[in-house]
Amino acid sequence: MSIDVVIEWDTFEDSVPAVPPVVSVPKVESVAARAAVREATAQRRRQRARRLHAGMGLRRILTALSHIGWGPMRGHEFGCSRAILEALSLMMHAAKADYTASIDTTRLQIAKRASCDPRTVTRCMAWMEDAGVVEWHRGGIVNGAPRAGVVRVVKRTLVEWVLAYRTASDAEDARRNAETRLRIQRYRLFRNRPRRPEAAPSNGGSQAAKTRAGAHGDTVPTLPAINGRGGYAPAVPSNDPSVPRKETPAMKRKNEPPSYFKYLAPSCAHGAPTPERCSACQYEAMLHLEAVKAASARAAERLRHEAERPASWETEWPPEYIAYMRRKYPDATWKQWARLQFSDPEAKRLAKGLAR
Image 1 (tube, one colour):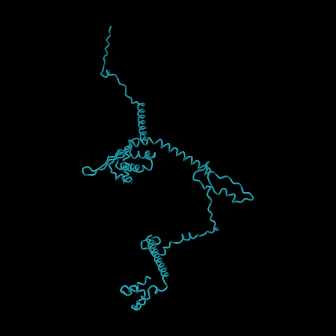
Image 2: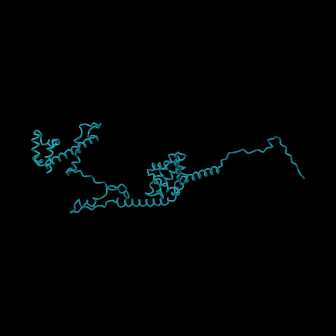
C-alpha cells in the first residue's frame, strides 16, 4: 500500500532551503604554510647568494679567487696574468658587462690597463685561452676597417678553481692563525713576566749592585700581562746639569750654516721672504761658490807654475835672440817679443834655439 504525501508550499521562498550565514574564519594552517614557504625561499636565496656560482659578477668571483691566494695562478710567474684578469674585470665593470664577462677590446688596450708589455699580454692570453679561463676572438681588418677583438672570461672555470682550492686555503689560514696565537702566548709568557723581588743589600754591598740585576728589564709592554699584572714604567731620563756636554767638531759643523750662505744676495728677487728660504737664491750662491773655488784653483796652479819657472826670464831665450830683439825693438818689453816675431823672419830664425 502506497501513501502519497503531498506537501503544499504557501510561498516560493519556502520552497528554497535556507542557507546558513557565511562567517569569515581565518585559515591558520594556510597562512602558516605560506609563511613557511616564503621563509624557505628566502633561506635558499640567501644560501645561493653566499655560495659562489657562475651567475655572479666577474668582480665578485675574482675577489673570492684572490681570497684563496689565486689558486693555480699563485706565484710570481703569473703576476701579469693576474693583472690582465683584474684589468679585464675593471673594463667590464665600467662597460656594465660584469655579468656577461665579455668585452670588445684590443691587445694594446689590455697591455695599457694591466701595465704589461704587449708581447707578455699575448703570451699570457694564449695560455689562459688554452686553460679555458678566457675565450679570445682576435680582431683585424674587415672590409678595410679595423675591428677590435672580443674577450670573454669563462666564469665557470674560475668558480671551479675557487671551490677546488678553498679547502687547502682554509687549512693554511687555520695553521697560520694557530702559529700566531701560539707566538702571542709565548710573547706574553716570556716577555711580560713580572720582575722577581730583589733582596736588600748587605752591609758590604752597594745600591748599584742591588739595581744591577733589574737594569735590563723591558719597558711597559703593549700587550696586557698575564693575570692582569702590568709592567713597570720606564726610567726618568737624567737631566743633571753637573754632567758637562762635550761639543764635538761634528756638532759644531752641524750648527754652522753652509759655506755658500756668505754668497747669498742681500735680498731675494724671486718672491721669498729671505734669501735663506729661497731655493733659487741658494742655487745661485752654490754656483758662485763653485766659480770662486775654480778661480782659486787656477790661481794656485798659476802660482805653482811660476814657482817652478827659472828665476830670470833671460835664461829662456838664446843670447843672440835677446840681443837682436833689444836692438831691433828697443821700446818693446820681453813679454811682447813672442807677438813681434811673427812678422820678423830673422827673429823666428834666432828663436829656433829656444828648444834647447
